[in-house]
Length: 383
Image 1 (tube, helix red, strand yellow):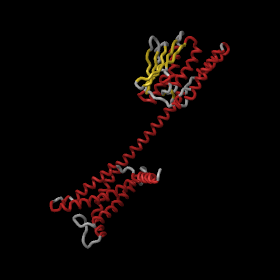
Image 2 (cartoon, rainbow, N blue to C red; image 1 turned 90 degrees about the horizontal axis):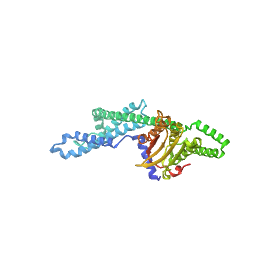
Image 3 (spheres, helix red, strand yellow; image 1 turned 180 degrees about the vertical axis):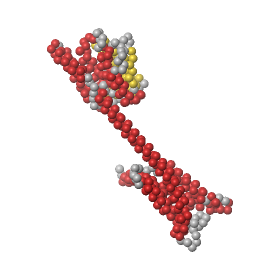
């Protein structure tokens, strides 16, 4: 920043610290009131024989009013900015500022008008400026101070209302931020819900297979390692990609296929171009788990799972369809689906949803629909 810019920045900060709240609307109001006062004070000159002196007199009255009003306005605004809103001596100090600035302003105005002959000013032959000022103060000071106090009271009232509104808004923002952090913490807990019995059962199956079929055991262990390699880093993130989630679901389904044998077959139909599409972590895996747990496992013959994704009207639709036993009492209201709905609502509001419908000829189709967006290449590659 050059010297001129630094100086302008310092001036701006100084003005904000002393006179913040003095808006263009307030400035315009002061100017209008001063103009009205100038017209009022010289209304007796609006006659044909005195019109020659009307404009000079009105101009002098307008300038006097601006000086007086600006001195009081700047003083009151400065007190409001420099004294904290909760300080008990804020308003007594504002009253003192009104009295002092009103007195000083009236002295300045009287001194200016004493330099002009009537009817433009109050100049009197043979009397000094200060004599004219001192003579006029007892008559003018109470009235001017009362008017200044009334306008200042109106300003202080609206200023206090604005400060209360700003404090309420700040408190609401803090509450929303706290709610957001609590929701993020809750979502991280939900994301970390990799069922321990799934890991223990898988490891027990690997140990048993090593006694009977080492090749199958090695394949199952390899898929478990792929599963954990994708799942564990995502427990601490709120963002993932369709490519990562596909790899996680595929590793999970490969493990389950080894355990279930011919009872499980699956297909994944996701174009590589969608790998960098943004998708909240663990949601696709939850749908795959739900399809096996509630759809295929209860059937002796098992079934088929198809995972697909497409973009339609700038919305990403991720679908998990199974040929399991279909809707049961808990098929659409289980904990996993409820977690997905809660997370989508927290992340996207009403612009994302999870729908569950009957599959044909049998089973359930679960679809996540959310706004389509891409994750940058640096973080979007599948693990």
